[in-house]
Image (cartoon, rainbow, N blue to C red; front, side, top):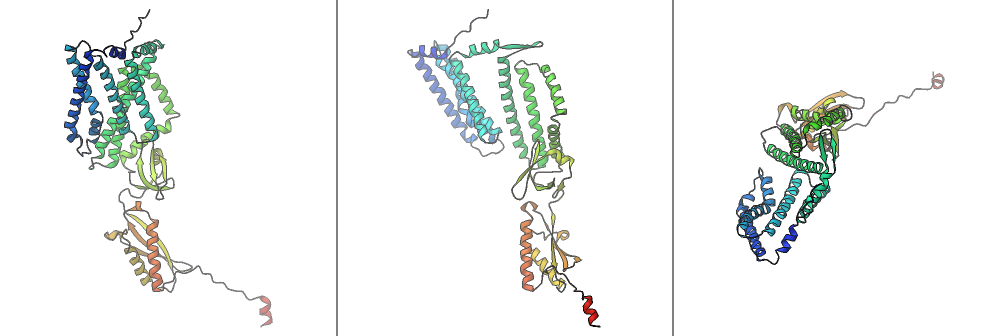
Length: 433
């Protein structure tokens, strides 16, 4: 028969000492510990307020958890000293889990805000983590935690040679969540360090940061499971099932994941490039694990699976160099002075600041395309470097400039023309020989 769980209530012990002078001594120790922690934070304040982007995350974390951590260390030391000359230290025993809970809440919330983007769902996770930590503290000080632990241990099942209890599964889930948050925090820190290395190509930095995130997550799971007593060999069946799932239902997901690393490593598509894929034109704003975000010039964003960028033809307008050619066709009448029209068109092109004028191979030029039915077809060719600023606005500005100059010079842009020949009726020809 299982032994009954002793009911150890820290609150009851504290109430018993409420009339004792020992409680006043413990309050004095807590006051000294709080003063020491406050003094330590004051001394560290100049260092914590340095504007250093490289270690800003670490300094921010210390600012958030520094006081409860310093006070916890001071209380632990003060409790050891108080045990030498006090009969009991129930208040100090109660302060230790209280400070641990406060430290855990602040640390978890800071880690969540550091890893994830601010959104409504993040607040739910923060509240959930805070309630779980404070709930565990309440169960501990009331003496109910050992009883709940024993009840969860009693609910168990056997799987082969391994015994799984509800407490073991809960403990495994908690350890894995903490390990994953820690891995994501470390990955975010490595990513911020890599992004600061401006000498390295941006795509390579993105590839290394995503690879680091993947490695840290795998290591977190591999370390967390044995830490709670779960043998990794029991995951062999799950690994086989996962392999079958990837071979069938998750094939596209795995393909997009691998394609994302290939894109980042071979740098065929980089963040900031202007590309056309699947009749979608825009700027590559993000290259994520599963998809690439394409931002069009009108503000719309297209989610393109990474596999599509590998298997389909992608037109990269700025792969080797940012220069892009823009052609503006224009028709003039046959009685136009073409030399004058050419000069006016080149003058209109040179009046735009975005047009390249400092490269001999990419200067504005006017081509005589063909002698069409309604007039002579000319084409103005200009080159620009800032394709992401748009083409239509530049086309409009140049066309407006050409229109003003042609109107001032009296150059006609012809309308469609048709020559109609009226046939003479046969009866009229017979009556007038």
